[in-house]
Length: 385
Image 1 (cartoon, one colour):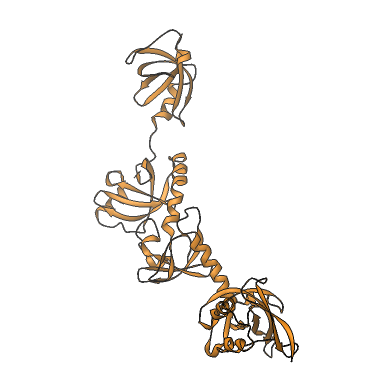
Image 2 (spheres, rainbow, N blue to C red):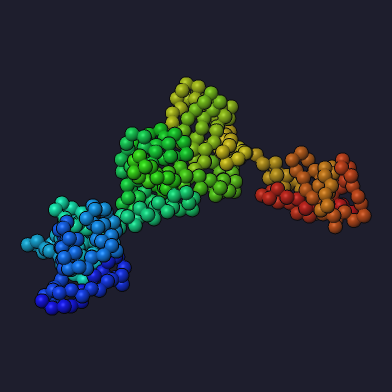
């Protein structure tokens, strides 16, 4: 027996150590996974409260994550890695069953490698480690941090339809999506989503189900402003969507991934109207239409009577640049006078083009067209000579 110093690491921090002088055989290393190890250490007189708190994590059956170093790897007769011993920096060496780990992880493991592990207490004081559980914990924390952030979405695979919704796998993490949040409108075929990959957004955590709640609907709503802008630019193009439901007033249709509109019964084509009157229109049916009017993001009027006629397109032939016309002053502002050439077609005479004339609302005046834009619905005019 000789007196020598023993250094013990007391936390996950490799520099958080304590050094003690004890009488032990030279080269002694204290290693135990037995529940009574704290009492054994106390025989050497090297226990204090700080070490005790750290070491009791495992002995109190708490699960926690830490770093560890692989000290050995066991292989079977065929050379397959089946288990690993991992030094987790305290008195413990944990056992990791590689049979339960993904092949992609096993292939990378070598002795001396530092790995993140999730530690659990097993029977008879045995300590087990899981590398994949530690990775899942990181992924779960990343998803949890994104709850309520409308700028973050994840790709999720619908794995199972259950009562009330779906199980969705997000990066290997099992999440729950209520059926009502699987789309903008009520689904007509709940089974159709199983096996599909969708973009979902984390919205809350369910204590009851002990899982993260995700929503595809929340993601679709973020697409609406851009979809409306694209729709306005291509408003004369026909659109194909699918029926989500019907009322006595018409047919509701979903289109362009995230938009919903109503086709009034008075604007249905003859064939569709006959089906509509005979209850032959069903959710999920494909239907083609044009956009008649965009009142708001939530209120879009559709039609099967053809593209909307735009009086500005027709007016562009009558009001070409440098032509003259007669209009009525409708408004006086600090910028100039607004003049209506015909119902729905108005333009501005800038104050610099009014010369010395001060027109009043209702005056009839002659103007010269300087520019006409049907896409911007903008006319620039000057007083005619």
